[in-house]
Length: 65
Image 1 (tube, rainbow, N blue to C red):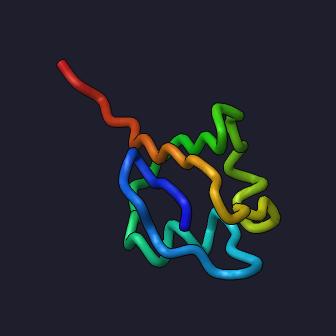
Image 2: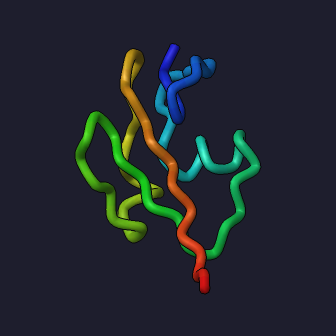
């Protein structure tokens, strides 16, 4: 299991950030990812592996006013 935005979520062997976004159906044009407090650049979403027990934060960025 991993934690995504404070809630438990099923983990799978070899899960990448991109795969997590697909599973969660997150399709925001701008999204910030942190794994265990470490920022992951969007160009690394396909290669950054999420490990069992990791704490992941997915924060979508939106303009406001």
